[in-house]
Image 1 (cartoon, rainbow, N blue to C red):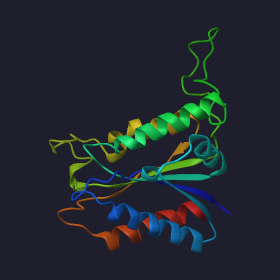
Image 2: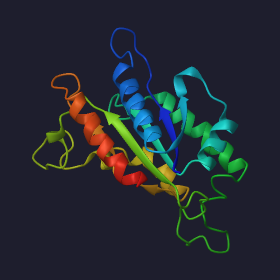
Image 3: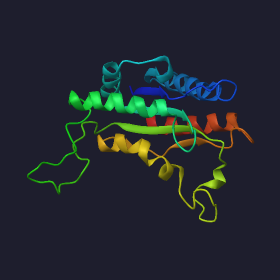
Image 4: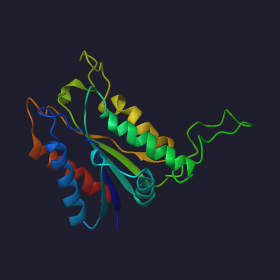
Length: 197
């Protein structure tokens, strides 16, 4: 049985970003995963959390999925706060990582090899106003050929640093000007089905 931690990183802005789409995506994931024999735990950052409990959830999980809206080309600031608090607690307790993998005697050793999260996987599921066409195309002005995963490397690096396998992200694009939520949910279920088989 695959154990999945779902993290809701939405941050509400009255009259602009209510969180309905991100909640819809989380509900669809949770239902699909549980119907297919997975055990799930859910954290809603905005509703509060205990950093120690979150460390234990990360230790417990095989697969961690963060669902986030994209605000100004990154996850909401409450997600960075969550990561700082949870992973610092995990470092202090040496539950998620021991250190950066190097020693004073061997400072040239591979940086980022002190993690304890090997065998786990991490994925970001994102909701964007940006269209799919804005990514991976050097003729596009904004990202100049960068992919979504390139743009979100700061969010995935913390998990890689701890030894977790980073999966390609999933994105709902163009959610304000040309949404295709049914199609996005169907695509996401297809990805999840391959991950938990």
